[in-house]
Amino acid sequence: MAPDLSAPDPTWTPLTPFWESLGTRSFVSSEDDDRIHVRYYADAGGATHARAWFGPGAEGPPGHAHGGALAALLDEAMGMAGLATGRVVVAARIEVDFRSMVPLGEVVDVVLEVVDTAGAKVSVRAELKRGATVACQATGLFVDIGAEGMGRAAEAVGL
Image: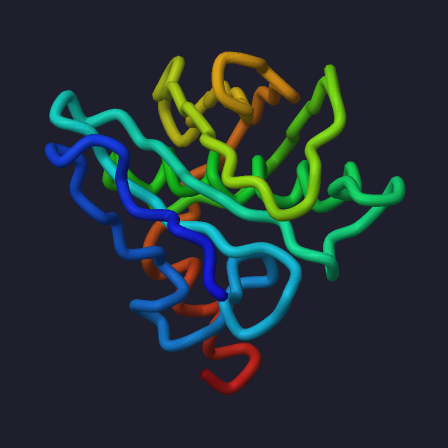
């Protein structure tokens, strides 16, 4: 049975991930497997949110999500927050602090905040939450490569 990743607030609107507009897949958020499922939303104030689920294919410690799976989700989610600013970004640096393990099969929320948009750089903060508990936090520096840069990357692999 698929996890319920619907928006907890009816004012949130779904965001279309960039890879869908390119007709490609995401390493992180494929709903075709049992690793990670994720949906992205914008709230009424324009902030980006994610709701995610880690399945058995994301297992690290017994019964819990692998730290690499958590980091990959946070990387993608922070990139989506950068994309929501109207920029086409890729990660230059991310840092993740793990605070507690995340059980498999549980829906978690990612709260994202764009901190700065100076020049071609976009700085983002993220918290992955299990209810009121912050399971991990991340900061990221993303660089705007523009639609042309993303298009060249897609062309280089024949998309």
